[in-house]
Image (cartoon, rainbow, N blue to C red; front, side, top):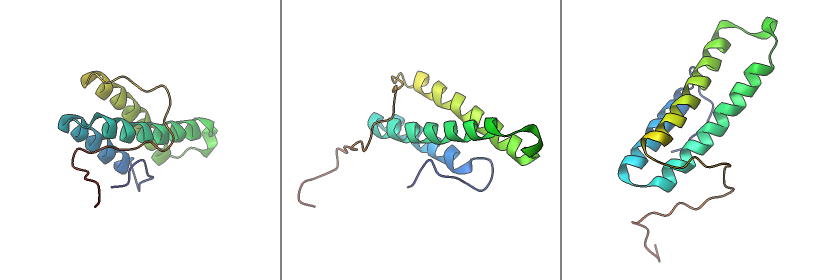
Length: 107
């Protein structure tokens, strides 16, 4: 499942990705959860920076909504890290490897 992508309205794709990461935490796959959350966080931070760069005359109501949702989801990500006792990574790793206990050599 792709994550940290643009979506039609309200950051729906990022919201679903956050729930996916929470499910990964619940399943004990902390590495996957952190990877997903960091990518979503990066996307949300980029969106937030973009909306903050607009002048007041450039902003439409839908953009205000998108900006508010991006801020809300960033707060949600911080709360998830606290809830699951995970250490918040200081930076996103380049090309991290996801290790799964079900991976078997030769397949």
